[in-house]
Image 1 (cartoon, rainbow, N blue to C red):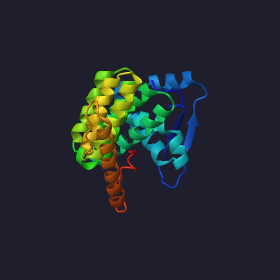
Image 2: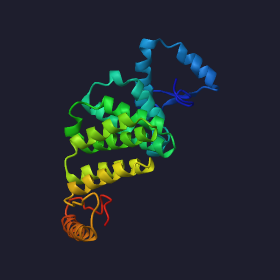
Image 3: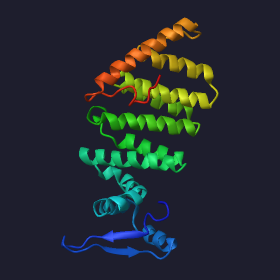
Image 4: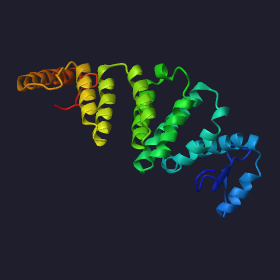
Length: 247
């Protein structure tokens, strides 16, 4: 069953488009549960699809944000009926909005489900057609999986993200998440190794036990790289500062 409120409001569309929507509300959760139980299993996806579409299409931006979990939930239940690539991309984006919102509400388990469903729904060409969304999904899911203690799943998502990352900055951003998560688990040696590998992708190489001169040399190199990125960033390129890298 959906969370409280998912079936509490049902919108029915009038035959004429000019007609306003009629809204019905159940007075009690048990009533809505009883009504839902009368719908056959094979008919439920279509019902979820209709409710989700009506909520999505007839909600203001503010209402859409308030009902985001309900909208995504209904359409996720109807995902097998959504076959058009554009519609599936749209649902991926909805889950990508719902996931961080759930994570911000201290619900990493719910967030993980939104991210996982988005990856399941995404068309095969998504890494080419919607690279930024897919990369964010893998990063976000890896972090949530790690927070829940699902370390193998987290590592799998890291590998997926790294294998598709198109540039050094994206790879370094993924490795930065790994460093933070390993550090929270007191895995300092592992965090250090990953951090050094991340720096190497940016052209900054440090030995595992560097001498002071090596540290100073690398810092100077970093400053030079940062300056070059800042100059390049005056166009449409992402700078190291914008990506979250400071030295």
